[in-house]
Image 1 (spheres, rainbow, N blue to C red):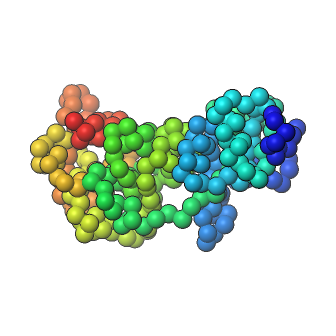
Image 2: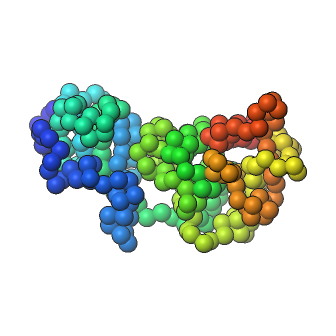
Image 3: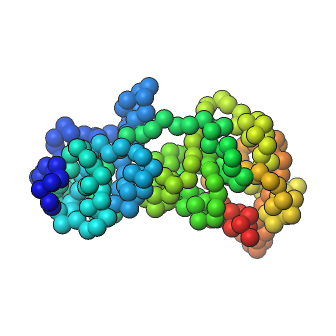
Length: 272
């Protein structure tokens, strides 16, 4: 590793500066600086670089790569005065319990989340993730949304955080490329969407649901696609107050798709 980088060689994880990697779970990291935004951990050079492009600040880097490739070099260069802790792969494996993707972690500072109105301003196709709990699903939905031209995402307060490591990794860093924010608890996001001119389509199994390829849906100038919990779907109030309820036509031997798969199909249909 070039001497111009501010790095520290480590042979174990038992130093206070590495506590944020070792001792805190992701919910605790979110609350470290309350009431200011907390910290999150990024994994892999590609994901870290996308976070940097989105203007998130690096606090420190933990790596097993003392012969960095081009992407990892860019991470080190972007770290500025932040320390770069370098240890053997076995040390990082001890931390994670498995071989880390790309052998690079970065602790990064969160940013203040914008309001719902700020995120949806000027957009025509957005998605809403209501009480989605699996970080893999969150990451996969963000990746599909990025690929299919969804312009912004709202994540309800009871959903898993898009900045959890697994969500970031599965999304391949697209959580940093699509504008998103979290709705506040006890707020009516449907009213906000309606006031901003959005029609809403609830993805749900219902007797009166229409097909996702219905021309009425596709003709809406501004549309919000609402996706629900992995187990029970959307809450009844959301379905009741949405402008449309839609479902994906499929073989009758299967009644539904995983929410991440369903999102990809719906986003693709809107892009056609």
